[in-house]
Length: 219
Figure 1 (cartoon, rainbow, N blue to C red):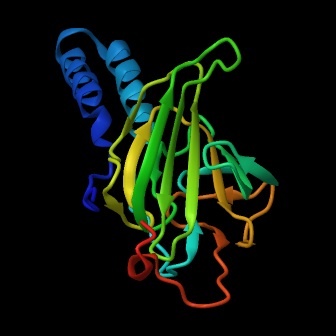
Figure 2: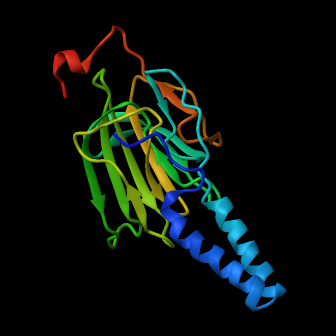
């Protein structure tokens, strides 16, 4: 399971920020004030863009939290193409200045992952993964990266467990994320709402009785 401990500035960009910091310091002594202030401004913007503050994870086991920061742009019933079942689809569009870290929407086990490069029908790179909760609920998250920057880091491995709101990935300058949740879940967001990764509850899974996938060996 990925660690909960991480810095306030995303470690994925430490190398770039270190170079910028070094150039800024050198400019102060070797070049001149104009270049120094330009580099200082670039460094300040970079630090803001790549911030990664701690999140307060809600202590609700059946809650599905937002995996990313962004705006809810679509809520609808939809068929999930990987598992071929009817679901509620919540689409979140990240803005260029939102926080870029990715968090697990539920606590559970990573069942499968899929990654695909752009093709003639879809210009964006895809990364999808399937989580199953201890109660046997399946959540599929589909990530489409921005056309400009298609790099991402995902620290998930099939068969491992992740915690609710666990930081488990990072993609530069955001993208569009679809969360496919059980159809009977109770939605707690609406179109146009701003959500925060790991903190905002997208929906609450509803069970008519207590179920444990661990006890029933559904994994």
